[in-house]
Structure formats: C-alpha cells, structure tokens
Amino acid sequence: MTVENTRVALVTGASRGIGALIARTLAERGWDLTVSARQPEALQGFAEALAGDTGRRIVAVPADMSDEAAVHRLAREHVDAFGRLDALVLNAGMGAIGPFADFPLRRLDKLFAVNVRSAYQLVQQLLPTLRATGQVSPRGARVIAMASMTGISAEPLNSAYGATKAALISLCETLTVEEYTHGVSGVAVCPGYVATDMTSALADKIAPAEMITAGDVADQTVAMTDLARTVVIPRLLLTRPGPNLWHA
Ligand SMILES: NC(=O)c1ccc[n+]([C@@H]2O[C@H](COP(=O)([O-])OP(=O)(O)OC[C@H]3O[C@@H](n4cnc5c(N)ncnc54)[C@H](OP(=O)(O)O)[C@@H]3O)[C@@H](O)[C@H]2O)c1
Image 1 (spheres, helix red, strand yellow):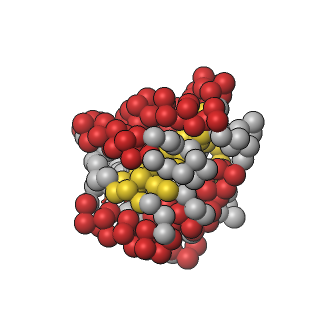
Image 2: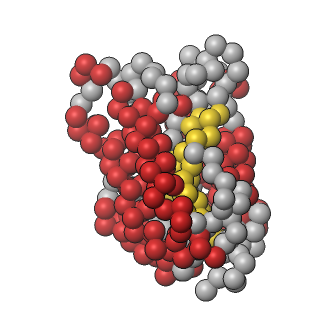
C-alpha cells in the first residue's frame, strides 16, 4: 500500500516521447506510478531508470491498447499495486494520415481502438478508484487525455486521427459533468506538432526545432494536477506562434 499522502498516477504510452516526460516529471515531484507501453524491454528499462533516479515506486505493466484483455489487466494490476489513483494519464496513441476519400476502414478501427476505446475502458474500470481518491483528495482525481489540435481544428489528411482526438475531448468533458460530485474531472490536452518519434517523418516539412517541445507539453500537463478539485481546465491548448496558431 502507498503512504497516505503519496499521489499516484497511471501513465500509458510512458516509455518514450511525451508520456515518458510526464512520468518523469511526476516521479520527480514525488508521485508513485504505474507506467505502460507495448514493448516490455523498453518499458522495464525506463521504469528501472526512473525508480533509480527518483527513489519512487514505479510499476511497469506492458499492454497493447488495442487488446481489451491487456487493458483490463493493466487497470487491475494498478489497483492491486496502489489502490489509489490521483491522475489517469491517457497518453498512448497512434497516428495515421490519409485522404478521407479512401482511408481504409480497418485502419480507422485500429485508430479508434488504440486512441479512444482503450481510454473509455480504462476510465470505466478505474472509476471506482478515481472516485475513492477524488472524494478524499483536496485536488480531486484527474483523467488527463492526450488529445490534439487536430481534434479541435480540421487538418487535411487527419479525418480519422482528428476524429479520435475530438472523441477524447468529448469524453473528458462528459466525464467532468457526470463525475464532478465524486471529485473526478477530465482535461484534454491539445497540442499542435510536438517533436517526438511520432512526427519524425514530418521533419522535411517542419523542422523539429519549430515544433512544440515534449518538455513543455509534459510540464503543462503535470500542472493540471496542481489545481484544487473545484477548478477544471477542460481543454489545454498548446500551439505554435505564427500562422499555425489554430493548426497542428
Ligand atoms: N507528437 C505530436 O505531434 C503529437 C501532437 C498531439 C498529440 N499527440 C499525442 O500524444 C501522445 C503521445 O505521442 P508521442 O508523440 O509522445 O508519441 P511517441 O513518441 O511515438 O510515443 C508513443 C508512446 O505510446 C506507446 N504506444 C504506441 N502505441 C501503443 C499501443 N498500441 N498500445 C500501448 N502503447 C502504445 C509507445 O510505446 P510502444 O511502442 O512500446 O508501445 C510510446 O511509449 C499520443 O496520443 C499522440 O497522439 C502527439
């Protein structure tokens, strides 16, 4: 069991990119964590390094977000390990672009499974734990979903990916209006292009140095957990200055 005042998070997609920096920032602030991603070796290595650097308890649970049984196991192992959840960070996601006209339906299904269905399932399964934490913590319990600017503003070739991110924004807002009496609220983080592996293929069009840094996204995401339970920021937009203000 966790010490009473130690806050606890579950972070998906935590082995690299934005998720890894969110996990590191939380652990450096004294949080204990469950971290998850598909590749077990990379995840275990990350968890051990983070535990060594911070002295925090870091539990690694590999899970593919497109596998319902694996997502179920992830939630159960988190509850068994900690019995508490102050922040559920729904960060794991996949990207895929293509013209609306002939975007393959199988790829649409995969995007929704990884980006949306797993998020919905994790919230449902972990809601009793979120409520129990939200009722006793002055900061409540937060569901923080890594959405995207493409969920707010249309971007060519992003009909499917953008729709998954719009769904996450809606999911977070509905959660807040339904669950606030239990101290549970949602925030959808909506960044434009962030310099990570996911955007490395765009490097010839947008220099990584022109993109948002993963560190800025992680810092602002973690700042959501500082708010009192009576405050919610439903959408956190991070975008690039200049003509791309309302674009990814
Ligand atoms: N980069 C951007 O420009 C940008 C902008 C807006 C929003 N976002 C969103 O931010 C989130 C993180 O993106 P990122 O740029 O940090 O990506 P990234 O660097 O590619 O990292 C993705 C992370 O998610 C894990 N992951 C990928 N597919 C998974 C699956 N099916 N099941 C479980 N874990 C999976 C990866 O580990 P494994 O490969 O081992 O599973 C890795 O830990 C995503 O939801 C993305 O849509 C990114």
